[in-house]
Length: 75
Image (tube, rainbow, N blue to C red; front, side, top):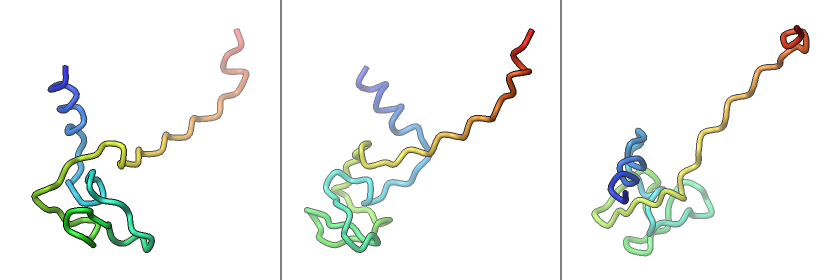
């Protein structure tokens, strides 16, 4: 089960980066990451200590639902 979940998390198309690492924390300026291992890093950089943290991903917004007329559901 654990192996299947790991595959699902990695299945989405994204590039590993420091902004998704468990060791990184977003800096106040928003353009860099404060890493507890390497110090200040760029958001898109990567090091060998990279550990993916799925809770740092921001999900895509849900699409807006279309408006329906009541006439469409009338019999």
